[in-house]
Image 1 (cartoon, rainbow, N blue to C red):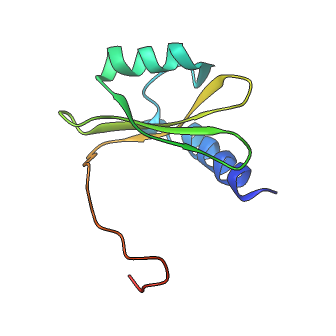
Image 2: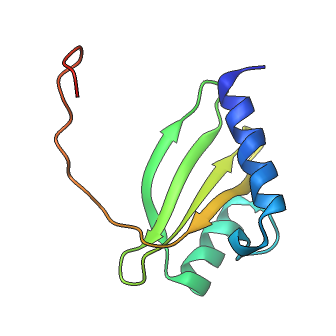
Length: 103
C-alpha cells in the first residue's frame, strides 16, 4: 500500500475511533463546505498546504487565537475529509538544517 494512502487511512481510522477528535460533521464533504464550516464554527483558516504523491491535497487549518487546528485531505474527486483535529496550535519559523546535516 502506498505510504500516503496508508497514512491517510490510518488518520481516518483514528478520526473515527477517537470521539474527542470529532468536531465538525460530516467527516467528508465538498471542500468549499468544509472550509466554510471550519471558518464559521472554529475561526480556522488554511495555514499549510501540500500535495501528496497520489494527488491528495493535504491542508492544515488553524485558529492561532484559540489554538484549534484541523488537518484535511482533499481527494482528486474534490471530496474533502477530516483527518485529525486538536488544540495548542502554534506557528513556528524554525530554521531547518541543510540537507544532509544532522539535526
